[in-house]
Image (cartoon, rainbow, N blue to C red; front, side, top):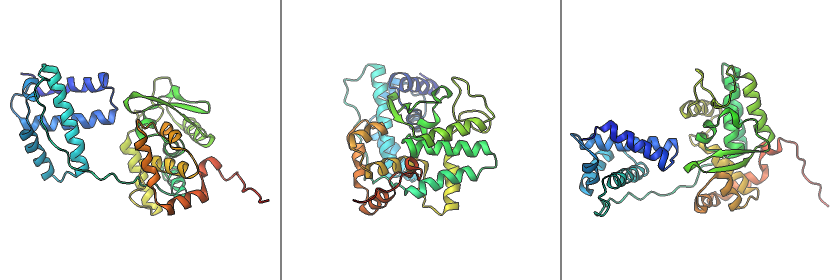
Length: 309
């Protein structure tokens, strides 16, 4: 029999090198696979896993739901388990058998929660002021401006290495599925990263992470999330004001200011236009607020209203 660790290691390698999934997805799928193996117990190899039936999966998911798993989390877990079992079937050559059928719970797709331009600016400025060390405050501000000013996912921003900087007017980003896209970089975003690098105690060598933690390793998402949570509390913002909300705000504000969906799809790195179209459902009141302010980080308060006539 194959040891649990060997199964997980091979599954990890397949996801990373063959499927080229993102680090976040691989981590989630690995965790789901480990939970299933723990549930199955005993000596489990690829053959046993490949023959895992729907009744077994339902029993496992019933236990998971008993732990308080939400519909959205359950749907993601079922998707991960189906992928794991499909790999086992491919690995053992028994793909001709009927795969286990397990219906995922319905998940209502919500409208992305954007925050207002003033709130986005306030959060990015507050994290800079709230740090005990200048370089850490500058770092956190630079990260958040990449999310709000360039529409990066937090994982994409933290995955940047030093050779990516300084860019010209654009930055090449490695997105989901290891697909590259090019995003424009506004001067205020570029300047924020330059300021951080000037204050950072770490050398910016090729291959090193652009954004470092206090001990010099790559900055983690958890640190950024905690920093934003602290700033959110000080500013009295809702719990929806998260790092990912800044990316939603980037999309919502540009769409309200006249950006077309296809261009926005390219900027966000969405595989399908359907993922981008959800931003058209933002309520009218938010749209009006955004139109009044446009995108403050691009304007930087410099553009003057046109004179009539």
